[in-house]
Figure 1 (spheres, rainbow, N blue to C red):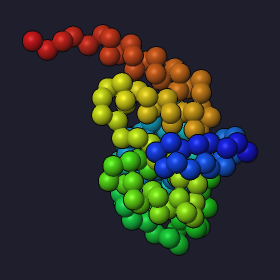
Figure 2: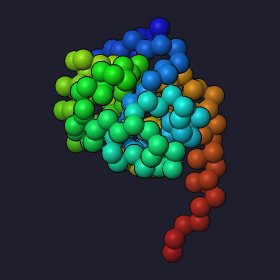
Figure 3: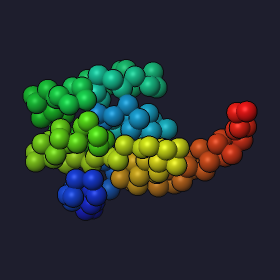
Figure 4: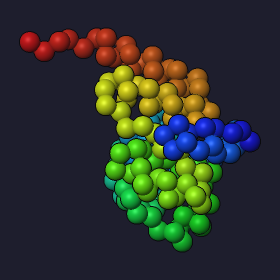
Length: 147
């Protein structure tokens, strides 16, 4: 087990070295988990997690700010991802019962890359997060400015 501090909530959570039962209430986090090759560890998603296609095969446990408590208990997650912004109050409430990590809502391209790296660090997919960050930087550097 390792202790992880969530700055956005001001809380510490205990996580296994490699969380195996992850619930994501964020489409961006869900897609990132698949990019990090952690899709098999996703036990549940929100109703809005539709990418990649494999995400649609995961159990839907709620929406942006609602959850099926019985299903949540049944899935017994190692880790729940939410984001800040609209989900902040939901994340705080849920964190009193479960291990919740709220990712700061990105507001820039750099923030999107940072979010991907942060998700990788939390789920202990550091090499994958580094490779994804590098790939995203390379892709961005090849974009041509719009005149």
